[in-house]
Image 1: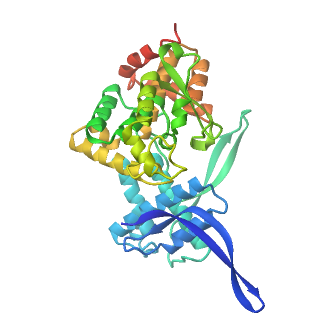
Image 2 (image 1 turned 90 degrees about the horizontal axis):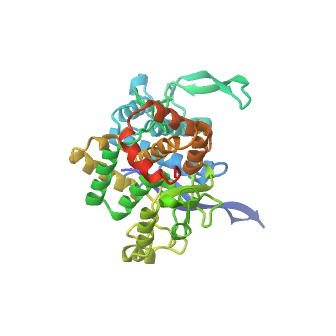
Image 3 (image 1 turned 45 degrees about the vertical axis):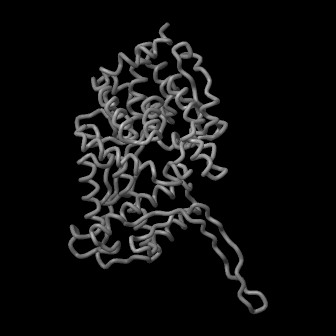
Length: 415
């Protein structure tokens, strides 16, 4: 099937000197994502779009866009469609059929609502760009343009309306019906579900994935940050001033941390981690298993806490090993008849931790103090994101069974 690889892209510019053409080195792009079809040929138009994006977009954004486009390429190969297939009937067009596939995957729980919306939007951006420079010009329209008016409110309460251009193919990021999903449309899991997930990981997955899941449930860090953790980050952990007596420590992450650890929106701050999990990570950092992996890694990656058995980093930028491991774990969970694995995504570990933390904080602090405390611990950029957890905790009983156990470990603040 189609695949996405990272290449070093060196451009050369023609220069005429004394009637002769010479080539001078131009722009050098490191880790440029490119897509190859199953037969090994390059998707030239998509790769040209990736090169175009490097001039004005963050490399992480370029990588995410190409990952979404690669998923689209795999679907095209399965359906045996060309990316320029736009017949007269709208229902038969490649983009219309791909939209239907994404909506079905979302409704079946195979893809998160946010992923579906972002994937369709990324594919649409590619087609807009390809059409704008004449790489594609179908006889029939690819979609129908629509104009929406979105009401917005600034910090002082003044409302205005923003005009937004959208298409008939856009997929709104909608939460599951009947839920109060606090973040990214994903629900927390219960204590029993969390236990079964970790038990299956211990028995069916690698030690690295098991530790990553425990860190997700125990710290609320996003997968990108977890895959970028350094050994020194673990060694530099310090007791939490408020919860030190209850055995909680703080890890510094973000671009201003030393060493820096990748975070969403480049937010810097500290996250909570319990002593038992911290001790286990420190033991793993100097285990024979990890040191063997470190010996195979390049100098820039040797200090990463988590490495593949080939000494390569996990994560979106440098490989897809973690996605393969999560896919195998979900398959094992489905075969074992564990319902939560039908729609389990790694980011649900974060929603679980933050929900538990918010419930415990509300039992000890005022609403304002709890929001500020959880916002800092979860590294939320906006208060509105944290406030959704307050509403979830107050109106939902999904986390009731986990609240008591979590609050007990949080009682150091009460005392």
